Structure formats: C-alpha cells, structure tokens
Length: 96
Image (cartoon, rainbow, N blue to C red):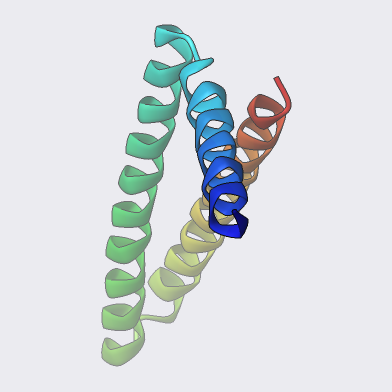
C-alpha cells in the first residue's frame, strides 16, 4: 500500500510537470530557442574577444588590449543580461 501512494504521487508530479511544459505556445518555444541561439553567439564572441585580448597582451599592444578589454566587458554584461532575462522568463512561465 505504501508503494502505491509513492507511485501515485510520482505520477501526479510527472503529470503536473508535463502540463506546465506543454503550456508554452509555439511562439514562446521559438522565442526560447532564439534566446539560446543568441546566448551561444554571445559566448562565441566572448571567446574570440578573450583570444584577441590575450594576443594583444602577449604582443605588448596596450591600446589594442584596452579596447579589447572594454569590448569583452560590454559583451559579458550583455550575456549576463540575456541569461537573467531567460531565467526571468522561465520563472514567469513556471507559474502559469
């Protein structure tokens, strides 16, 4: 009897999770995919900026390194904002 209650509770929880996930519309799913693609592009851009910054530092190009550091900081702030936006959207959608 005890295992039946556990199984019923698990089945109920799984049903609630799938109902919550399926409540997203097709438009919202496209938005989520677009957001994650944007994050991937930002991460790639940050990796290129870091490589360029390291190369400028290694070669002693101080002015170029300063520009690259500013670009890297700007891209990192944009990435953080995008990730916060996704977390906010996920939290908001979880309460629908």
